[in-house]
Image (tube, rainbow, N blue to C red; front, side, top):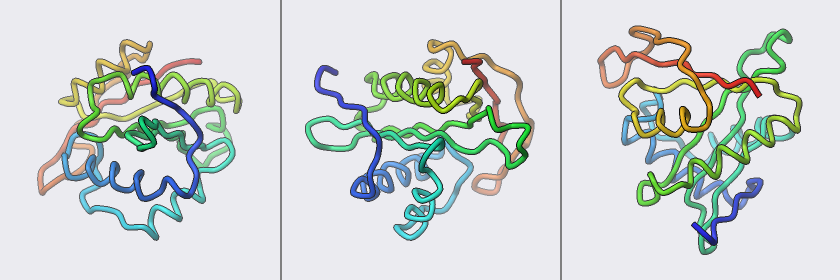
Length: 164
């Protein structure tokens, strides 16, 4: 994608970030969240994602088509060097390299903020996401059985990691 721009997110991007996130929630392939989010939720979320815990967006032809964030892994100071990641791509742009472009820049941001490791949690059936992560050097750590509930059914969650 020649004209794809990866940049730090601004408050003006929140409506697009919210729309893409809600697509991910509705599609049931990327998160245990079951209820769509609203603007006040995203504003609070964005306020917590400043500094080290940044949000990046992928923009194509002046439209935000994906986003990624570094998230706090745990509140204990022992884990200050570990970040959790989130990546969400608009439905029409999945599988086209947007996730890879975001992940590459997110890893650079993580290094610049002194993170030594990124972890992520994905559904074992999210093969497209896993393919991206493996291609970028992430390894499977293991699978948490019945880790959460989604639509009244237990769901397994796979943990992956990459040392930076």
